[in-house]
Image (tube, rainbow, N blue to C red; front, side, top):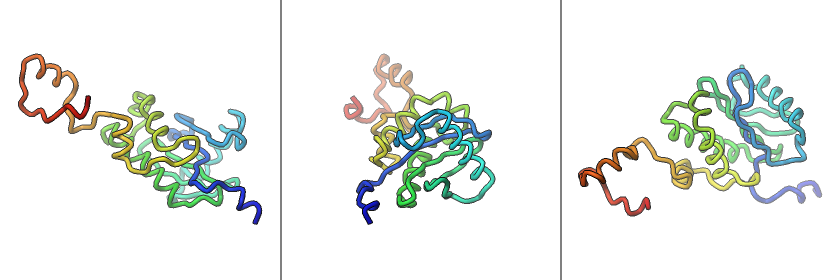
Length: 179
């Protein structure tokens, strides 16, 4: 009973991982420094997670006393790791938010090449969803708005600049909110 009293009351995440289809790390953020303090231990854990999940059709795994939810897309594997007591549905909401946000930012091309080209934005997305292991956001639209990424429906900056220079106001809405 004393062990349960030590658990934090907020929903927490121990780590977020994105691995390629060979199990190599593309992104990893560990929020519990005591869990795997060295890079070597982290990579061994990632290898174990990948080996357990890459051929399975499940969405959840239990490994080394941790709850791991995961999803794959083309040549990427996305993982959200929580404690054994963590709510799996909350971890899945974080995973879906991460995946859906990246899908919109990468214009539905959730592949290794596009992810690496936009890695700075991927880190921003992860930081908007989770801060210090605490889940802050689970709505992809809110994350995109906070990260301030241009979506597919918005015109490219060059066209907006061209329209401004030429005085063409057709097709432009009230852009004063974006300033």
